[in-house]
Length: 278
Image 1 (cartoon, rainbow, N blue to C red):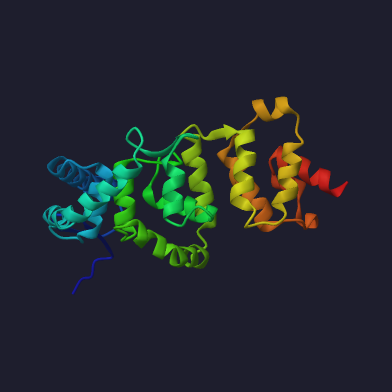
Image 2 (cartoon, rainbow, N blue to C red):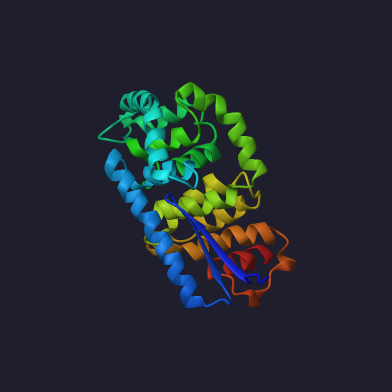
């Protein structure tokens, strides 16, 4: 009896693909995977068009439907959710300003009102986590689709449900150590795909996001704020620098004997260390 050495199993909404190879041939594997992904994309398009929902919502429904006959099952799941979607849409309309739950100005700030009503206002990390779970692409603003999908993913169908979930969410964040992931996510949202943010903006975010993680960050923020105004206005913070700041305080903190100049730290961190050891 012969036994296949390599088996590639891929499952999509219509069937399970089982491909056997006597040896791994990279081009063949790539072709198989490409066909699989094309089918997945087509399923998302089919579902989104038939239900008049976004591809992102369609992807979520397909994921919940399992591996077989997913499109039909996803359509049925959406029908089952129709009443809850209607109720959530009414909740969204109470906060909606120009199509968004958002901070527009001091007189038009439904984002803060929503966070207060949901018991999230006093927890910066929870606000960030909810923004992440909603998949918000504009930071402190939610579209109807983001709000619906976020609430459904959290299994919250009223504001009270979300408020009651807060203690469990805090435990989940701590248990799964999601801080670093949220930190990276928020940069990508704020930078809006440009991969850089303003230095002054980064200081504000470091202050709000990292104070609860690294006590030494306070001195770093003071150091950054002492930079000349021209420097703060003209300097950009890249995603690499953003990540290196986390890495520095995670691995070195205030133990500067661990700091190795040959590790190619960004100039800002090098200057900060020199400032601290003087």
